[in-house]
Image (tube, rainbow, N blue to C red; front, top):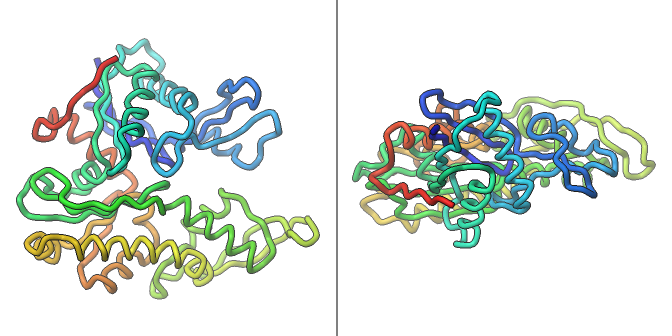
Length: 333
């Protein structure tokens, strides 16, 4: 029986297999037939269909804000990924550790367990995302010394202060990568009367997205639909414009970090001042974010090595070492 870890993200799903490391990285996207709900494509293949499907097929993300929005579609996606990492051989049903955002409701926790068992897991255990991200980023979470992790994913931003293997204080914000994409779409529509899709907005964020003037990265031309005449149109967009588009959402994220620091017990706050703030998740790659957080908080801020993989690597370390202080509890069907 294999042990696997799953970083079930709003934007991407990563699967860690014991003894092999990260065996799969795929977008959390599923394409289904509109009437029958039969799965047509999963992952990268389905993501290429976003915004391009005929009326008979719907490409969707079955998770919203870090929690399950479409139970059956999520189960089908996980089932597909279980088969993929097993190399299409008949694999004994795996033991699974899967991450959840901090502060989700009991109903949301139960839904993640149920969907994993429905997908074919023999047993399932939950680990909170900030703990997995911190372990995967190389922070010594089991020490008495406090540390701080900021994990910015597709659906949620997790800000947490950790000590002695647990979360002392945490803020879970449902503002993250997806909301940044939506802000870019709204900005282009408002400024240029041009409508762009999610894929174009994500490309702009990744290629020239910046949150600090010192990190600006020029301009890029994009295509969209002119809302005045309905025809295709091309416009050049700069880093400064993307920074302006994302400013409100970025401000919310930075404010949640500042608020968490203000509420941190003094001894732990002193530790964090020494150890710094660690950024992980895809949002950590936003150019200049570390500079912005350092300037506003006065605390050294660093981006984790391979921030997109941090949560999956953290779950993997828990699997390889057989638990975290004995706090991992498996549930079976």
